Amino acid sequence: MVGASKITENLMTEWLGLPALATTHGGQIDSLLGWIHVFMLVLFVGWGGFFVYLLVRFRKSRHPVANYTGVTSPASKYSEIAVALIEAVLLIGFAIPIWAARVDRIPPESEALVVQVTAEQFAWNVRYSGPDGKFGKTDIKLIDSQSNPLGVDPADPASKDDVTTLNQLYLPANRPIIVKLRSKDVIHSFGVPEFRVKQDAIPGYTIPVYFTADVTTEEMRTRTGKPEFQYEIACAQLCGLGHYRMRGFVTVQTAGDFDKWMAQKVKEALEAAADPFK
Ligand SMILES: [Cu+2]
Image (cartoon, rainbow, N blue to C red; front, side, top):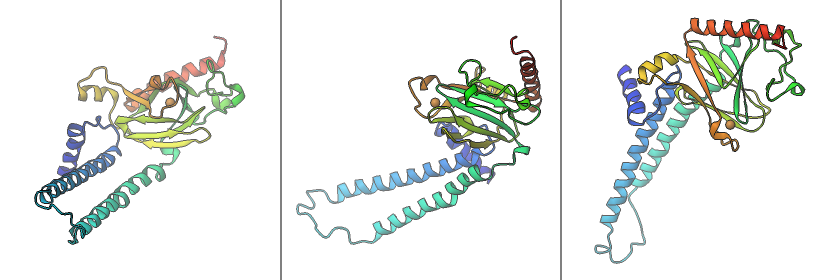
């Protein structure tokens, strides 16, 4: 099985040009994509060959008069049934279980890092709950597009240690992440190609997306040989005129580096909460 998964990995990244993989669940998705490509290649060659055979076999010089009976052999019926069966196996046996695992088996919040990601035209607002593990209350009346894009209530004690960033999502490697995806205006889509994650953000809903990133940004820079490499959040829904510039960046760090970053951010947040006029 190890050999087989190596082959699908090569197939995906080298032959099909998929971006490098950086999450634990992504291999399953890649291998399904790989099998669909193999199956489609077989179909393409099969149907294409059959078509060429028909062109030659039933050429006008050999059959000047049309045959109104058509095909009598059951071969085409059986091949149609075989194709439908294989498609059913791909769908019911692979695609639906993988999808079900992504949407149903979300780990409990106590075992994961919960990050709120709120999309708006044309930015990604990121919020962490801080050491208390509680997100401060938000109120639509408090929204200010410059100073308080999420409408966080400064009077709520739980909001004091909340950390917010704009277009910068910092994540620890090898720890389950639950992104709670929301939108302030229209439908956006949170897509990170290397994570094999893509989920629409729909106004009025909070949609959980979970994954475990297992390759830090640093490691990916070494692996790809690109010192500038950044994971990017691409908005994958055409959400307005500024859609093209709606990009965010994900920085995956080791647990230690992430904790350091978070501690610094919490300190800044607490200082800002203590002295709002600074
Ligand atoms: Cu968008």
